[in-house]
Image (cartoon, rainbow over all chains, first blue to last red; front, side, top):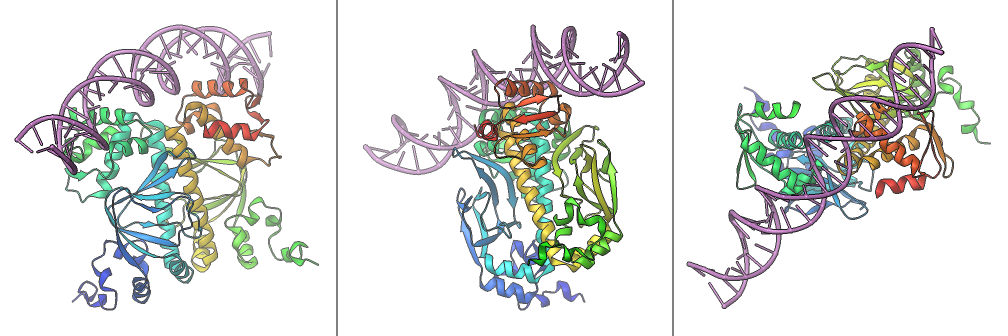
Length: 240
Length: 240
DNA sequence: CGCCAATTTGAGGACCGTCAACGAGAGTGG
DNA sequence: CCACTCTCGTTGACGGTCCTCAAATTGGCG
């Protein structure tokens, strides 16, 4: 009998963690049960509404968080007050900037979300004591770096239609469990936010969405709910 | 008397390292003298010509390198063979992708460069034995991530002229020692490469360069040598 | 000097931004 | 129940920025 999957080993870890999306994520997935218990004692599950700021740019946040559900957008606030979205994060990603007290970005809930908040000081200590954890966070940073560079290609070389298709593909592959070919999901972003992320205007985004709809690549229901009948088709829009 | 600056402590480290640009960089700056000696014994200083590929995308490189001089461009090779530059690295940056054998990018010398090459297996072992080193590489990854996101803003929201100004600013602040206000440097990139990095065409880059020249923000000599009489002026072009 | 590649310059057109009007839902109040 | 308003999204017309195609110019190198 396989003990590892029987639940017996889950004894000793906080109840709240047992069914948590982030339980096997970047942070919690590499902690010992003792550390997990310690972190659990000092962490707080929090519901945040869409649009709510989790970390403000330039502030000295003394907290990190894990995303348990929902989508978080990373924004750069320009000197003139304009927002620019530079990345999205999905459950069970880790949110925060190790080592540096001051955040260079603001993190804002794109959808209603649940996050698990814990003190910076505690995790920083665990990082210095746990090479595994350092390594795991390093790994996430490298993955985000890959994603950011992928996005640089998208913004630099692709047309408006390809940009919109790229974003739909990004969301489809991260936000939702998918069947073999067909995929359906709710857009976590408004048209204005999509435009922001893609470096386009609302109108252009809207036009390209209807183009994609008319060419049969996607179906749109209720403005927010998207159905992709054939993901391969969507991918062909991108590399074209 | 301050021993730390007298050179006495340099005894025991490899001769080749003593005057190396990367000696206090991301990797070598955190190694013990024993580790430095070990790494030095297994490393190789190599001159690479401009245009030479250091790491090929998709290949399984068994080496890492430090940039000792010159500029390296990170490229994504598209399925259709086109190149897209997604980042630049300067001395004394570290080049390589810890943990993952297969590179997702190709690294190519933009200028003639000198690099210090050492075996992946050795550094990977040092990483696992030296939390300081892990931490230092993690730090570089986070810095690159910040730079990539800064670039996303540049590509997404700025005009052609602002993009060119941004690139000149990036190069001016990384490639050369600068005086109080005035700065002069050689462009490490051709017009074609600049266009590639900025998501523009050669012609547009050329036009915007002459615009900047005519408005007095830069002076151009020999196509490659740029003089910025007033860096503040250049910065004002960007945030505008 | 002559060739070659790189860069610059010019003319015209496509794509996307700007401005404006319209339509669809959601919430409010009569 | 309906009118009203507010926000969000869509659609259309027009103009500007940047791309495309083409030619001229520069500089390097034999």
